[in-house]
Image 1 (cartoon, rainbow, N blue to C red):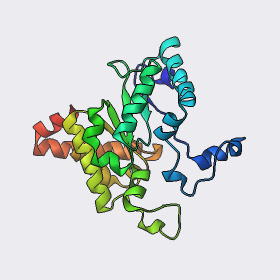
Image 2 (cartoon, rainbow, N blue to C red):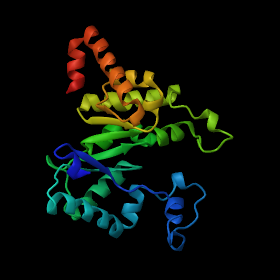
Image 3 (cartoon, helix red, strand yellow):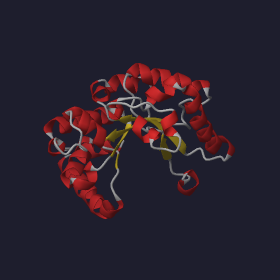
Length: 240
């Protein structure tokens, strides 16, 4: 991927398998314990800090691509960072592995937990170059609903007022701090009206499924033109 996209940046999200997903791999049952709720369990950065040797193997692969193969366009994004202290600890761990945030190596973070939303400024203060909003997990955690449970799946709604408030706070905070802000998950593909709001708030990029790329591109263009007519200065600030 780094070779194919070079010199354009490639942001690699480090592993975020849940315990049940690891357990389903060949031999996984020997190492993974049953968890009542894997979504809220042993995953993301918590795993890296608990088993730094495994994380080190992943970082060695990143360093090989960057240093030995020469693709400096490869950067890293950390998933499911529960607390500011976890971010601080994992950055120290990465530094011990000779991977330090710099002008040539960008560090991103997934924003997919309510704590990320409430304390976003504090997370950014620790030194983050970009965030990617994971709408799937964020919506489930804000609404306290498992979208895979048919008894409550109808409550799952990425356009719920509480979710929109969170999205607006994330995007506007990043725009104010001049931190790159992207969004992944199904929401942008399914709700064109959300894309327009994201552009208005100052989103940097939007991830959508291939079948709606052209449609979304037009929505983004139309939304930017509307803002340009209202306030050219506002659009100029968004682009920065």
